[in-house]
Image (cartoon, rainbow, N blue to C red; front, side, top):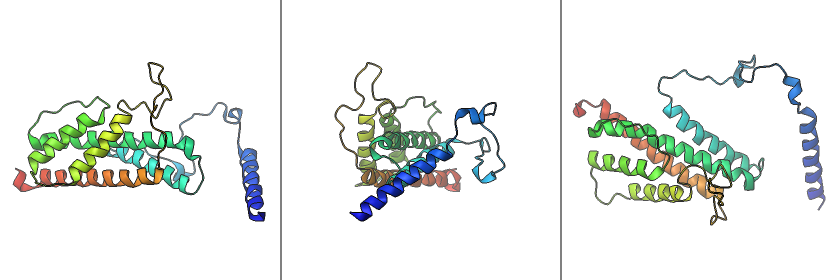
Amino acid sequence: MESIVQNDRENDAAEIDLLTRMKLPSSFAGQSLFIKGEDSYNNAMLGWTHFPWDIYAAGYKDAADALVGALAERKASIDSVVYPLVFLYRQGLELQLKLILPLARRLAGKEAVADLQHSLMPLWSELRQHIEQLDPRENDEELPAIEDFIHQLDSVDPGSFAFRYPMTKKGEVSLPELQHINVRHLSEVMDSVFMLLGGIYSWLGEIEQSDSYY
């Protein structure tokens, strides 16, 4: 009992300390929002690469992983953070597919296409078709497994809006049937999905660089 009371006091003290250190917008009046500060370790560099798709895709996945870490340490509210968490995973997955597809198309001899849609399954279905064309295999367990997880996510959030807004454009509840998400399980599954996609991307890159391809 005493330990519980002590923890409550420490939490209250931490919240008070945070409030005393917070500043009002007027404290920053007249300043630019995006600056290069003297604390260089806090300066993020943008525009340094001519091929940003991998940076964007990795960034959303890294952000999701950081949120999972914060939840594990009880530094964030799981019932609220779950929404941006799933969105980050989904956005990272969408960008990862859009990163890999142009390479797969080139290797399969297909024309370049602008991938403007947000639905995951059309992107994955085309990618799987190219993969199986380049490397036909029997009894492959991984492609059907990853397809099932992508299909589940795409079914719940087909347009990339369900975890960003509580209501649809039609005024309906965004997630009417989904009641629970175990973030540990979600992160483990998504880690496996991103690992496989990363392997596929590396494999396709090796094919493109191989003399045998030409």
